[in-house]
Image (cartoon, rainbow, N blue to C red; front, side, top):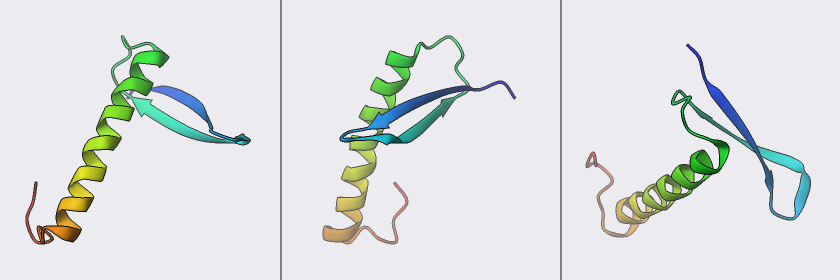
Length: 60
C-alpha cells in the first residue's frame, strides 16, 4: 500500500522527530501536518471527555 511519510522535528529537540503517515498521496507535507494537528485536538478532547465526563465505556 503506497504511503507518504512526513518527518517533523520536535520543538526544541532537533534530534527527535515525529513521523506522520498518510495514504492520501495527493496531500503535500504542509497539508498533512495541518490535518494531523486538527486530529490531535480532537483526540485530546475525547481523552478529557472520557476522564472527566465519565465517558470511559462509551465509544465516540
